[in-house]
Length: 172
Image (cartoon, helix red, strand yellow):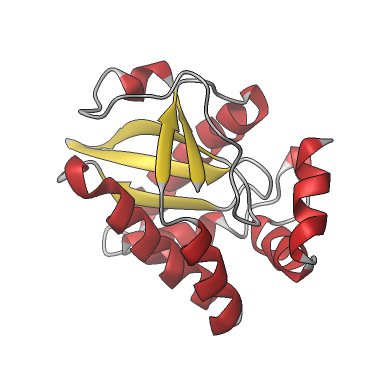
């Protein structure tokens, strides 16, 4: 079970119902936050992990397949930052059910706004940059909530924790 906390801006555009009282995420990385933005005339969704600030950019197009496309993009990103295949599989299995809420984390939304500016700048500089490459680039941006650590390094630290330990840290 995974939770994606959507901004009100994104929630208004979703064809899915949002859950008022979500169950806790069971995956190691914990809940995610999502917002929509445009790159030129193309609507996109930025999905950012609330704990590690790892971010995935996916097109808004075909929104009905959001869950599958997000998991596919996340798998590629986790592979690119050297997460082991067994850890990726375990994480994705825990994310097999998605619930959407409209409860957002202000710190995550602030970081996401920074990432949107970085994404637009990176695509302005290199219009041939793929969304996979863009997501990987975002994982290398120092984040203030991580004491200027990198999201990709934080992911490796969280994935390395024993399964029960991540739940204890997330609840604190």
